Length: 340
Image 1 (cartoon, rainbow, N blue to C red):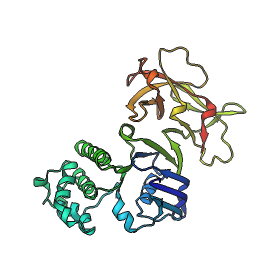
Image 2 (image 1 turned 30 degrees about the horizontal axis):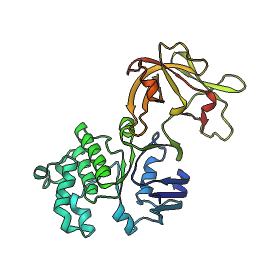
Image 3 (image 1 turned 135 degrees about the vertical axis):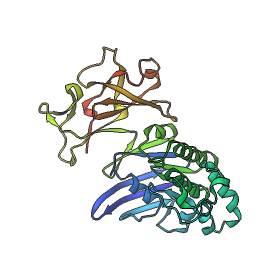
Image 4 (image 1 turned 90 degrees about the vertical axis):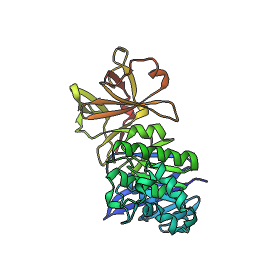
């Protein structure tokens, strides 16, 4: 049985369609990353999964059961950490224990609070009785996460958990998230722009754009302007007068935004002279991170204001010639470009 199943979901804000998902299944026991540009619907999806909002239309099933906000099963199962967290006007201890008390788990309070504070790197003796207003932004975010961890949730939803916090807080948040997954078997869904972290811990990364799930893996979005190349193709100018070519957008492509999946791009060292043209571009390798589950390397290649996401198979990476800051080739087939 899947953890979540979403059917015919549409969610609007003031008449604007923020999310549209015909059907989506999320398996339990996994860490799932949600990626995509600002305004793509990631936070909206997380709120629906956390049942803090009811979709405008459609149904959400949790463990096979149709579920709505304020359902008792949700309170016992799901914990959502929003990007903007607010603490109760009380001590750290009473913030962390509040959810336990509401659930009638007072007998577990002291041990659970100590454990949760330790997981997020807050020393009990130094922080337990500190008031909410005497915390830094990173400390307050860790207290909010500790309050969720004290419940040992079966589902942990995190919205940009490491954004706008200091490096120490980010490290504690990351390690606590992995602990919940590995020790308690919590299913985790993370919205984050921190691609390297997502690749290191996620079983799957799903990409959203304009409120729609485009599938797993990163996409590179190209917003134009688009110029006619011939009767069949258009192009966008990149740095160095390079052309990114694509088929003419179909009439249903409302936004005139082109996208190409990371798996549809190939990468080769700059000294490789066998890269075919057209569909060949030169850029700078800007980052590399290991996809923990697949063993592949996820790389980003910069070309001025455009950053391409590329998947590098281990056998290609092991040939050498790939270091951040080095010049590389990427190649693609224009017919692999998709329009939105």
